[in-house]
Image (cartoon, rainbow, N blue to C red; front, side):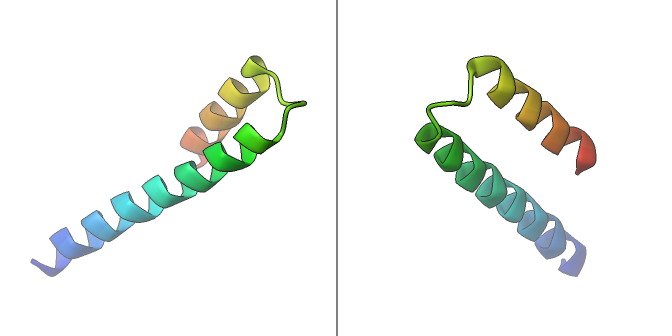
Length: 47
């Protein structure tokens, strides 16, 4: 039970990080589509 709660917490935390990153990129008009893609790949690999 405790382990499941921890896993759910990690999932929500990761989703929160991705949402913030996505919002930030939406505000950066200089970031091209490729740069956005590369950033998300980088974040995923580093998790």
